[in-house]
Image (tube, rainbow, N blue to C red):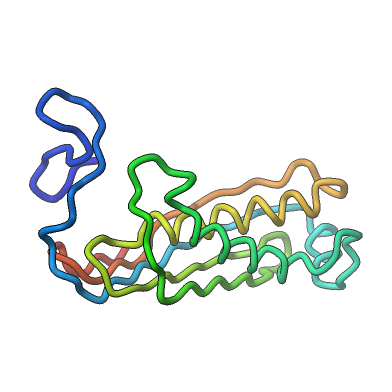
Amino acid sequence: MADQGGVLNHFDAQGRAVMIDVSGKGETVRTATARGRITMLPATLALIEAGQVGKGDVLGVARLAGIMAAKRTADLIPLCHPLALARVAVELVPVAPDAVEIEATVGLVGRTGVEMEALTAVTVAALTVYDMCKAADRGMRISDVRVVLKEGGKSGRFEAA
């Protein structure tokens, strides 16, 4: 992905993948919010809401999985910096008749943004819902995962339309 200057910033002059050097950047408060959804059969959502999924509290386990995933993003995504996150909040909201909306907000004071951590939290939370409910519904769809808000750093604020 290109930065705002149009330069591919994860590649060196020879085109090799590199981790970006952030040592010269100042620390600022940085936050990112990502959203996504998992769509399912209405009967599957009813099972989740009634607490009748055999594996347990689907939304609670998925929330915890999202938080844990945000903290491990650098272990999953090449070239991501390991970060000492100050905040990770994951919310899962059932939306009738057939979906769960997921939102993750991640924050820290640091030299690099937390968009990847927010995206990872949403995605892993959705995967956890799928895993816990797949016996009832193998046709679930994870979709619309995106950054909706980013604040801090040199590029400032981004808000999705």
